[in-house]
Image (tube, rainbow, N blue to C red; front, side):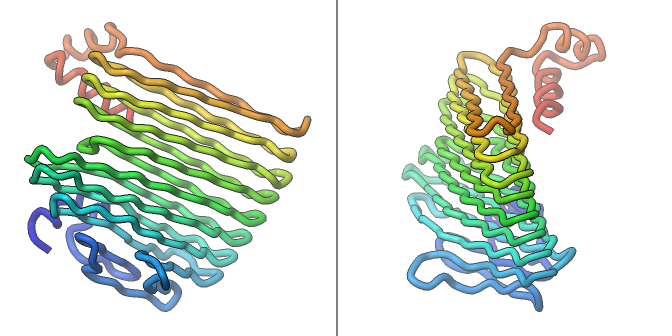
Length: 305
């Protein structure tokens, strides 16, 4: 890896070297390195660009790293990854995409990820998106995530996009069986002329299933954000969706929380709030010696954590 790729790797996967255990590092459309473990198999997908990740039933306290790096301007790719989490497993998957665009052409990565979480299994999935570059070309990322959780299974999904992405259309769809649960947490920062669209759809089809979808975002300058969360209670279940956004400058934020109860025993709640940074918060930090810009950054960093 060159220094640009190392910087991207640290930004999206918190890695400074090749990790231990199972991993797949993709750079500029090619595999830069791949390794399986005794309990986790990573193999190339047949008939499409991507990989299959198979985690054996009962696997505990293991992790998988799957970063994608683009450092060539004008590169466009679509990657299909399937994850099979065996019954009773408890694992962590760290993914993400980093783009460095130093040219005048658009660089784009579309990732389609399908998760099959087995009975009683637990998955923590962390995905970061990051862009940089000194050229005029745009950085575009469009992640699609499809989740199926079997009876008693659970998944925690943490997504973060904190700068450098000019356009993104983020789609997540989840289907839950009886006793299954999903927690989705999104943090998002846009600035300049950037545009970000997020769509979450959760179908709770099994009795005792639950969903909690939370988005925290900051829109600066003239950037635009659109957030849509659809929670469907098709069985006795509990669901909650929440969107909190800070708006600055001439930015625009639309938040559309939507809940639908199709049975009387579905208990669903939605919340949405958009506003600017409170003046008293700025004043309090500025009396401690911070400039207005430094105070804003402190408030934003705390809000997005």
